Amino acid sequence: MNHGRVLVVGACGRMGEQVRKWVGAHEALVLGAALEVAGHPRIGDPLEDDITLQGEIEEALQSADVVIDFTVPEATLHNLRAAAEAGVAYVTGTTGLSSEQKAELKALSKKVPIIHAPNFSLSVNVMGWLAREATRRLGDAFDPEIFELHHSAKRDAPSGTALFLAEAVAEGQNQNLAEHLVLERSGDTGPRPKGAIGVQTLRGGDNPGEHTLYLIGEGERLEISHRSSTRDHFARGAVECAAWLIGKKPGLYPIETVYHLE
Image (tube, rainbow, N blue to C red; front, side):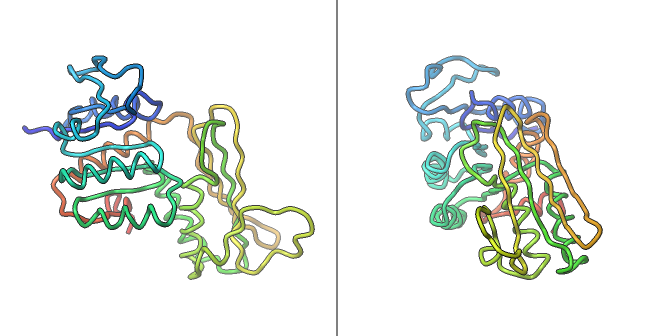
């Protein structure tokens, strides 16, 4: 059996270590290469499976069939450009991309297969499906509000998962999220605008992620929540997506396709 070779970007970070663990546990994958930013103190160190930590993406790609990347937008786009030139598939959970960066990612998917998702947990993606369907069925008599809490080191706010849930709500309401998204409230805000989709952000401690969608009606409300205690399910999901993506034609594949949630 030929095993797919995975390049883990940010291999010594919190997510990178989890991804390496789950690659090692996957029956169809092996760790092909590991990458950290140039100048990282562990460059050249041996990791598992006789893999040496590298600092140059072009060299690391020579031992890869697919990349898994949970880093920052600038690094992700830099590495993705190199992967597209090398013809290597790409899985990324990087959040906080600008509209221009998302457009470039989509353009690069014409060269290689890509999965870009804000969250790789199966249960979170099921939550997105539930959010869309619940909103559609309850109608505009229920006001949607989203709460999210993450660790103090998280760079982007609101989280990519919160925006993913907000987009699911907007789809359920058959409206444009950009026209209805409310990210802050302060002072005399007046009555809640019709169709508003509120997202509130908290940061602190080491919380891997917590999200709740409130659908608030008259005299009742529905709550759909997901709480993470580890990063395992994020990493495991990304590894499953990587195994699925190897050999696919170029294109930007939604994670819903992998999880049969179309």
